Image 1 (cartoon, protein in one colour):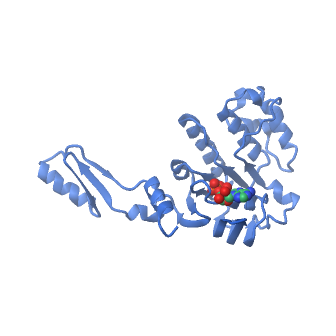
Image 2 (cartoon, rainbow, N blue to C red):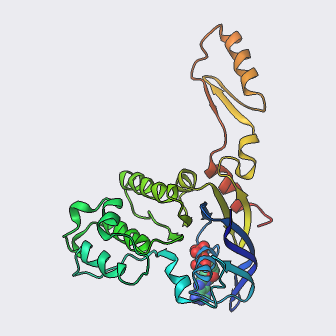
Image 3 (spheres, rainbow, N blue to C red):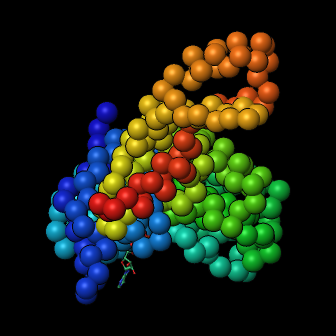
Length: 277
Ligand code: ADP
């Protein structure tokens, strides 16, 4: 597989604030990669440098083989960017807007297909201004993918969504990923990273403090399990054995039995609060 994003030793300072303090990233084509981190961690700065919207102080950056500080038109047409702020081009209908943007790209997708993909066929003739927040976000995604991008940037895509809208949105993103679009997503929802991303990087204070498969991040899969039951609770490396012992002790059903491992959120909170950060 070829590399979609290569970053080495990236730094960026604003006055006294070291927003990005030495980041390395290697993202392959076809990956869905999530950047997680608290507010102010340096996520937007990093992503905006990759998109070519901000300059860097130091480091190597290649996005689809091009240095974003030396962008070409051709390169720009291979990127899809969905920003945090929803568009407000109010008076156009969904179809007019998507068609309009299709005109900017040499290899654009069919507007009606894209509208269907984001689930807005029934709203195609409605003015964007009249849509709900979640529906407008879908328009944003439609505009992000209309150019048939190789690489899609999604900045906190589901902030403000209700749970059902988030699920639908995740299905949309999974569909794009299944078609082979490389996706770089920033989010502060742990479940979103877990649902969508093959790999995640946790950023705190401008550095990557953990990176990997969300299922194993920060030693999650090898962490002790907590076995609890009515009347007790114990952390153990051998939960199966403990459950057997309890079954013997209770002579059958163990009242209130539950076995759990740390959630991604538990691991994440430990990572971003660690004293070395
Ligand atoms: P995140 O996206 O993780 O919330 P940002 O990249 O937006 O983090 O910000 C990282 C740090 O850089 C923060 O301390 C923020 O206040 C600072 N910062 C971001 N943009 C600017 C800017 N244009 N000028 C000055 N400081 C900035």
